[in-house]
Image (tube, rainbow, N blue to C red; front, side, top):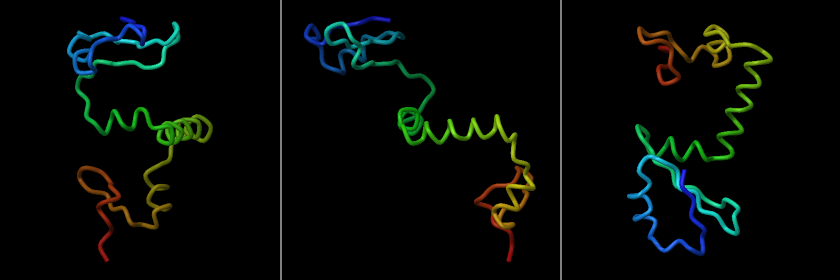
Length: 101
């Protein structure tokens, strides 16, 4: 991990990104970290966006806590909660595969 003091930073973000070479670059102000530039591999913009979205992270944490306290939800319970709108397929049930009417 490399660090650079904000007042000493004289490269553009593009130049910094080209030079991170597989390690994080932490930008500090008066010795305190204020930003980080991370190398990314095998990811997409949606993943990056969600991984830093406080509302999404809160949802994931609530889901993990519920799983820890209540246990997993069975496929039958999911179907019941969705009112039978999910039909099993060879690939498994999906919300985009509604039951025939």
